Image 1 (cartoon, one colour):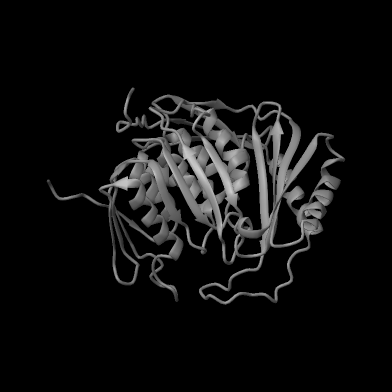
Image 2 (image 1 turned 30 degrees about the vertical axis):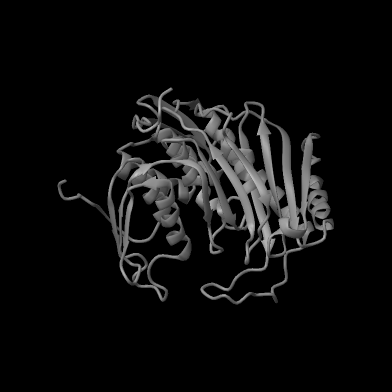
Length: 376
């Protein structure tokens, strides 16, 4: 065996995505200066947890971290998949943070993946589990992922700061993805959603639904928001409530927005801020309805939180042209495009469409094939 050539990177930004792309493209990476100048230098607990998760999913992957956590060597292995994987995501970020990379790694693993994730299911930072169910999984189906074997089951809810939620995610393997031409956003035909409440009165959900419907019913008649009130062991360890909304369009696009309200953890400590007044449910409903209308107004076939996932899927397609339309490029979307260029050598042609205020992106896929999958 020759000496391993490491790709050198600096800084702690978009670590999760760099690790994902390094794994998919089998590129060993060496990251230096991870938050070296901050008061809390080095890797955050959720990033270490993500590295542990990669070790569970991959065979022969090699992780080295120095004492201060500011330098990381990662040599990817083969993504194995498998049935009985359990991972505790911790409580510094929600399960949504771990889900996006798992979706992509699962598709290109050796065996179909079923994984049980424990931690926070809904928070205000990452996409909630409900949004994954309603928006991210349909995006995968567009790229030719079979719907049998692709499912997400919420067993219990967990709100910050203590978490305690559990979900089971199953992902089938694919040989290759399909390139897409997906530029028709259509008109919004219906709005669906789900609210949740854990360890608080179920009345909170009705208030959120009532105020959100107040906004939508002026615009379209077909609005249905379900409730999901958990109690006992299924409610996790902390009180919280939240809502996830999805607008479905005539061309089958799903545009989503979500939020969750709970007591916050004070950054860097284990103390809780119980003093903070929580946003009343009526305001949460109005707020999230307005956010969703803002996403719809921007145009594009997906909302701004899912841009990263969409661009990654386009880049991992066979060597064929994908063409997609998005609203305004989000900072996360731009960061994703840069990482894709660095790791996969795929460049997107970005063309603004002034008549609608949207952006059209075209790319030639990197031609990734799942070579480890058993062919029946």
